[in-house]
Image (cartoon, rainbow, N blue to C red; front, side, top):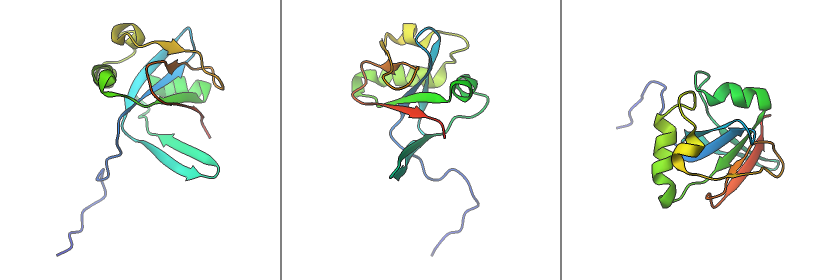
Length: 122
């Protein structure tokens, strides 16, 4: 028998990614599981970040971010960036991840990531 549930978070996007934002001097990393493709033509993807998160005003002011796919060797860093705030620690320093200079955006990408997608907010 079909069940009818009230609206909620029932579809869980995977995998978790690390989103970098800011610029080469002042930047942050945030773990995001709410990410995916919106459209292929034009190419558009999304991330979902709550306004109370430290990265939200950074992204809102620069209108740029980079989605960095993670690997098994990045699992500890991905977990840490999801439970610690950039208000309190420098996540780049604590995780040991390396900043790469963005090609089309001012925010850095993670050198250790196998794929980094530079994005502008629409």
